[in-house]
Image (cartoon, rainbow, N blue to C red; front, side):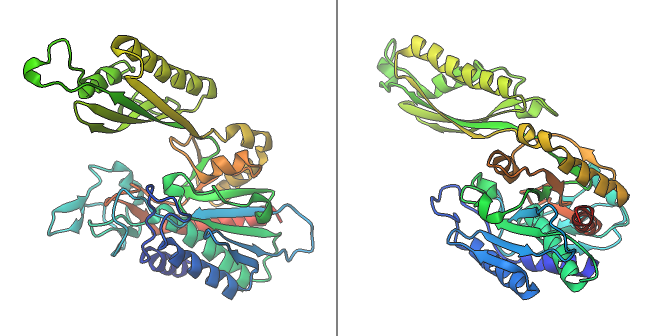
Length: 407
């Protein structure tokens, strides 16, 4: 199984699947289809049923039951795209076997080093095989590790028909990294009673709650006057933007929050004296507090318009996703199944909230309860990304154990 999962993973990360938030198409980049077509072909080669790839790139398939029972239908889902934050082309992974706990030089020419002094969680994996980058791209473990684990588990079941199981659904999606991963996912066509995304990080992670999320843009209209004659006339949109941001609570920023604490995160500022734009993301696990945060942002806009005149500040705000806990908790047995599967394999479950979003959130609100399971990677979206091979093998075993427990 170890050889199968690593070979499959290395093959998948060699394909550039970076998504593009500025594109309106689905998938947002045509290159994602290269991996999606490969997965479609592999699923057909496995002999699965109902293998399909629609015009938007969504791949689905069914492993039919061989236990003669009408048990629950469970699904496993992963996304093919990688983050726009870091190049995903020409990924050149390095394999560090029996890691000795010392610094790993990713790129000697550029002096890029992956060090446990910077990333102490690495110390969990001394003696294991680490797959790392060459320091110039991301790795793509988010979420090609999840894809490799699902495909390896399915290959195992197909190759071992003596292992009895119920019906299993497989789904691969585009554009998760830009928040559109399941926009066109057909839940009814997928046909599962519940599912799991394999898109988590460290071994043992099990998540069934995530942030409520909104995105906001604040447009600021200033007034530019020659600075020599500006007294009482100029309205500097850049300074107005700074003043606006100062109204928000300082300690409600990502760099000061953890666990269940929410935040306002300023992610972009652009402008000149005449006009400016500020872009925020708003996050909180509590739905009532989330609504209060949105209300606070509107109150800040209202206050600034009173100060500088109507229309000086315009707010555009849109909800992005919600906390799946309210949809998953009524069927908590699916979380318990994953927890027991991990424990039976000697894995300590780490049930914690996701400080972000997941395809499982929208799927849960569309009628498909969908907790998230670890895929094993660390430091996603950057050149310091790595994944222990042993964690990938364990994730594959968790998939197989869940399927066995639902037999």
